[in-house]
Length: 191
Image (tube, rainbow, N blue to C red; front, side, top):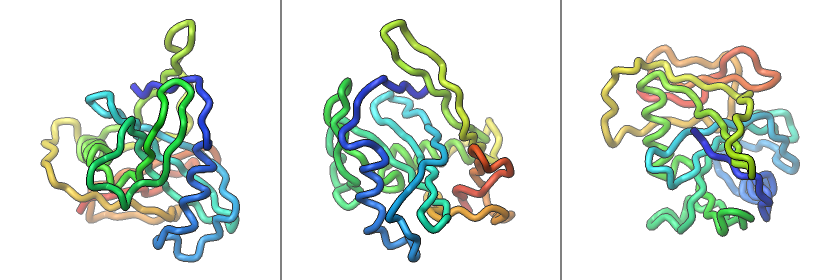
């Protein structure tokens, strides 16, 4: 389960992404002068050390972007090019935010979800009264089967601009839905 803390973030997740997105070569001209969060989903890090969250955002021109990130308590050695920025988390302290595909913990979680037919992690909110389950509104599912062996070194392809109706019949896939998007959309795949 993904643990979410009632906390203040400075800068916010949206502010962090808004500062980083304009500099990404994969934008293909998308207007990110304003972004709107449409949904988000999480995967679990089995070690419980790295937060793994993927944001689905609408650009100002209506394009839908898929932005996986990881949150770490310390810099990830050798991943300087993947650093999105840092945030101050009122409970966890400084968080180093990385572009998901540059973080091996994200890559392994995505690969496992795709190949084993997994889905998003449930969100549990940590409160003074204990854990409270939050409703998950962005749902993802891998096309594989639970008994599948997950090899190391697999390189999944993460789609950054999402197109309803786009499919891959030659690959294991991750598809998802979010509020306002009821038909599954291709998010990532492994050939």
